[in-house]
Length: 134
Image (tube, rainbow, N blue to C red; front, top):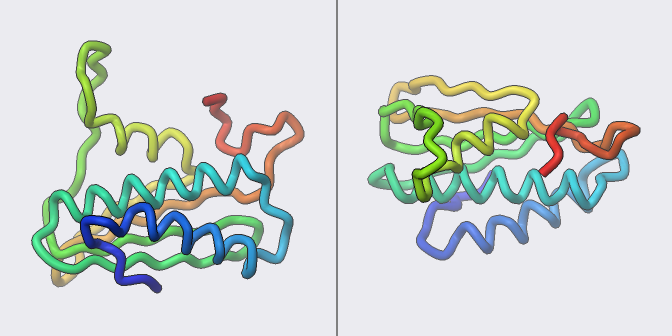
């Protein structure tokens, strides 16, 4: 578990997450899957820092060839993806997270909320673990 919601934490958290994947995963993790995990963690931690007034916690759990990422923060407002708009600049992070993860769940907690996602760590035979070519 990481206390990871400071202004400079997204970059530091990406490095820490990479270390966890390399040292704790019981299967080989492709560079592509590592990149997707780092991207998702960065987006979730950045959003928690940007929108929640207070601490946040990041938890990673690796099992059955997947990593479950959980980010808790103090803001009870549930995130919502913006409607599609090709002219919009920015605010695409949640859309990306929802597209590359096998599962996406948000729930209110007694204090704040928790976002939980699952990402497969092994590439499929086509080399696309998320079912999305980026």
